[in-house]
Image (tube, rainbow, N blue to C red; front, side):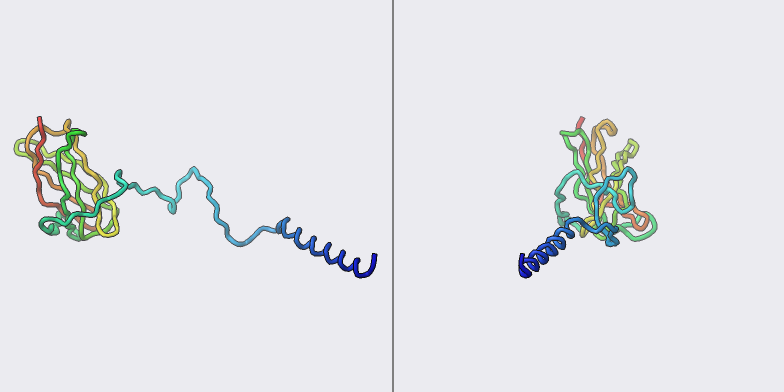
Amino acid sequence: MTKRSSALFAGAAMLAVLVLSGCVGDPTPSTSPTASLTPSATPSETASVVPQPTDTAQPRPPAPSSSPSPSSSGGGKAAAVSLQGVFWDATSQSVIGQAFVTNIIESNGSCTLTLSRSGAADVKATVSAYADATVTYCRKIIIPKSSISPGTWTATIAYSSPTSSGTSSTETVQVPS
């Protein structure tokens, strides 16, 4: 072998060692953070499940026919509750109420549908509310027929949270016999 061949062989061997040493990896632990997903049996504060409405696409709130006036039934900020509708649903055999709060965006409140009728006890159902980008929605509120008698009922939906409260305008709903 000539000197020149020996030098080329040594250079090629050195290059091979350098290239292959990168494949082995550093035996010392890395100090830079890495991200990994590992399931945990215990919940953490940063990964919480927030209930979402049953409908995947929420309609934009319709323009109320008359602007709801904020009314506060307790302390705090007056919530402007806009009634989207209260109606009898023949398929589920229940009264369904829907509303949203136009002037407050928060997820720590609740909405209560109250059905009232002369000579009968009030019937109530409460659900949680959730914030959207521009309003606070009440989840669908359902009162089954087994909880109410046939006839005409007056309905309101009230919103309440630690910092605000308000009640919608009234609407009537007919429950068939």
